[in-house]
Length: 99
Image (cartoon, rainbow, N blue to C red):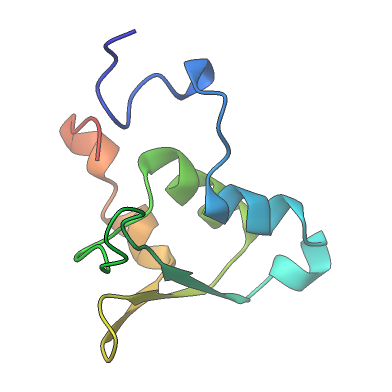
């Protein structure tokens, strides 16, 4: 359909890992929880550097009540994100699309 990555989520039939983790958990377990994420390329098994959840997943993470995210950037390095920062630094307010 030639839709740019990160846009028109309502047309996508896939469910992202973040979404699967959240819908598979009870609401009480999500409140103030920590989500751990890692992304690797399927073809070469190399970590995706500077990976971040897409805009839809960010909204779902916020609404699930998750407090912290740890993202693995490579074998030894992780980033720590306070989910509240997604609210304060909302990319959509700047008109950014995609990811």
